Length: 399
Image (cartoon, rainbow, N blue to C red; front, side, top):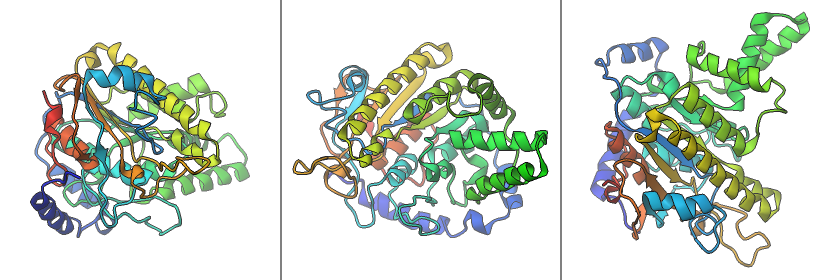
């Protein structure tokens, strides 16, 4: 495998260790406000809009970018031809580098591999905290990007990933976080609204308050504060359109597509990451769950691309990055050959696609590169730099 410059990675590992010695848990919120207030005045962001599509839930190359077996016709036959495809992207086979959904998401966001553990050491849980800054933090610290224009769109079944919005790095952190669009956030909005209205019995009110406390306690690092007006209005419009039962709005990855296209209309994000994940339903024991999920992600990608094309402020100024969180097994002797994705050779075999202005068109880069190259490449395109990323900028993508 082609490795990143070892000197750079060794130096940055040492640097991040120093930078991570003071975490958010050790700082007061007044310290966080002081950090934000002492930052030099930032200029408005005038770089390209960035849309990161996590082709997630563990998607193999075979069903995505292989023309003979793809369930992603738009991605494989059309969209990949508009930009630069890295068909041999990989997740490094190094000690402690796991191939999971949360780990892969943070690899993409930080440009750094790490040995992640759930904060409570719960089995199969992926509530991770990263010591390296995320792309959202790099952007919002470098430029005057309001909080409602740095967004992560998350699925209802991956609650741990709701909170990959900021790092514990002492120079970044909470003031430069992203916001999240998800059913979990909508339910939190509804609970606050219902409690504020107070039109219920004392017992019902007590139950609602307890439920809200549980919701808020899950995000124990973040300050409990009111939503930005733009986000509050976003959820009010969602409620007026879909109600609050949950039985009317789309579900699964179709929900993420709907949230994203509405965000483009109403919030106009500069950086948005869409965490598709329906491929993971293959664990229910039917390979059609996986292949159908791949096609749903492909249709979602096509819909988001169409939504960008239809909007003048996005049309000629938006870069797409499509990359899986991880791959899947390739066991031809198993009844479901792609059942798992834990650290097998094929689970480390993914791909990366860059499309948009400033990206080389119709190019296939036939060399092995690493997943942690995504973040520094995106940061380079945004003009922020990525001081603490260990990956290398994928220069072949840049026209």
